[in-house]
Length: 191
Image 1 (tube, rainbow, N blue to C red):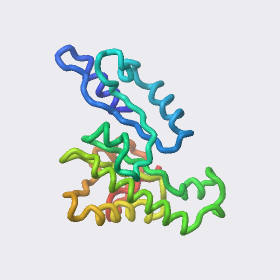
Image 2: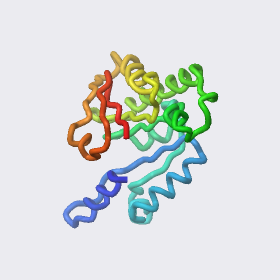
Image 3: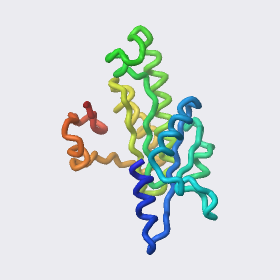
């Protein structure tokens, strides 16, 4: 939402036309409508408008990012991608927010981690040269955090030039109550 609001405010300057496109993808059909309502509630209608003679600046898709040929490819290549991958929700299970721990298993964890590796790897194909992917997960299990990044980087070796960037200190300081803990491939942020 911050990115789209920035596109809008910069586009309102008379000396600069509105540029850029925000593509919001949600694979789970029941979450698509929720995402669309949220985004529409926070952004001006002009970002969604097709009657300006241009394509809309905010687009919604509902595809499985594990497949390389998709509408995501049609809207790309991308400068930036945020991948908030669905996980086993182990953190929510521990807090009692999403069922019981009886529904969690190592098998589900492996399937979820493998799916996330495919998504993250496919995001690399959708980037412009010099683009950035930010992978985030609400999982606690290392297999669904650093394990995913490690697996995607391993798959990308020889096909892409991949550099893992640190999360900047200024971003970590934006919310003082967050506890940021470095990991092998990134940062674990706990509220």
